[in-house]
Length: 358
Image 1 (cartoon, one colour):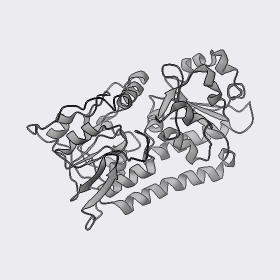
Image 2: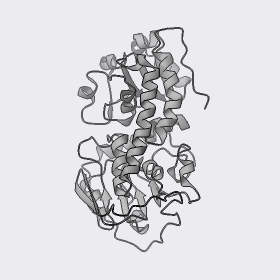
Image 3: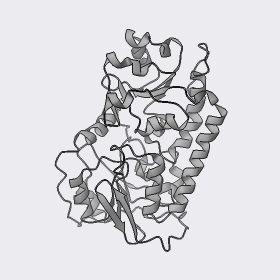
Image 4: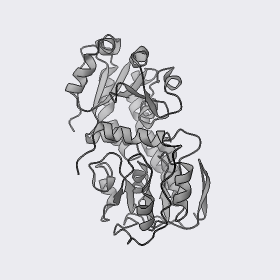
C-alpha cells in the first residue's frame, strides 16, 4: 500500500475536527455483508475476564454499558488498535490514518497479532466512520476513544453495537495515551492489565528523565510545516510526549491555538518556536529542512542558530510512531528520540543531532 502524503494525512485529521458540526453519515442499518475473516481474539488472550461485566464507561456523549466480553471489536479511533493489541485482542477492523501498514498495524505492534489475520482496514477521509461497512462486520464493540466522533455519528453506530466515544474531559483527538489504554482495558475486561501496561511505559519515561536531567524545565514545542507552520497543542499526544519527558511547553501555546489539537500560526507568533528544543515532523530531513531554514524570520531564532532542532521524517516508521503516541509505539519512539533530544539540549552548539539508524 502506498503511504499517504503528509498533506492528505494531516488534512484528513483536521477535516474530522472541522466537520464536528456536520451531518452524520446516514445510518448503516444493513447487515447483509459477511463478517470479517479476521480473528476477534488473539491466542495470547489467556487472561480471564470473569466478573468484569457488565461494565459502564463514561464519555463525551453520556455512557455506554458493555454487557459481556466483546469478540468482534472495530476501532474507529485512529490509534485505538494499539491498546487493543497490547491487551491481547485483535480487532476485526481498524480505521486507517497513516497508511502503509497491513491492517493499520505498525512494526511496533506486529508481534501482537500472533497467528491472527490482520484486521480489515476502514477509511475515514474526514467525513466520519464508514457506518454501513462497520455494520456489515457485525461488531459487538466499537471503540472511538482517540477520535472526533460527532453525536449523530455516535448515535448511528450505537444502533448496532456499544460505542465507547472520546472522553468528555479532553479535546477531540486529545485523550492521553494513559487514559486511552485504561479506558480500552475496562471495555475489554482487562483493567488491571491495562494499568500494568501504562505503568511499564511510565517507568520508561521516568528512566529517560533520570538519565537526562537537562530535560526537566527545558522548553520544547512540536511542529510540522503543514500549510505554513502548524504547532501541536498541550492536549495533543505528540506534545504530551515532550511533557512526559519533563519538558515545558510554550506559555501561550494553548491561548494561540484554542481548543484544538493544534493550529497554524502566523510569523508574528514565531516566538512560540524559539524554545530550547524544536521537534519538527517533516516530509524529509533534507529539502524540507532547507526550506525551513530559508525562512529568514525562523532562521534568526536562537533555536536555529544554536542547532537545537530535532527532525523526524513523518512517513518513516519513526515518524508514524511519533504521530500515534500509543502504549505500544511510545517505547519505539523513546529509543530514537531521547538521544536526539539529549544532543539538542546539551548546550553545545557544535553537537550534531543525528538521525536514528532506523
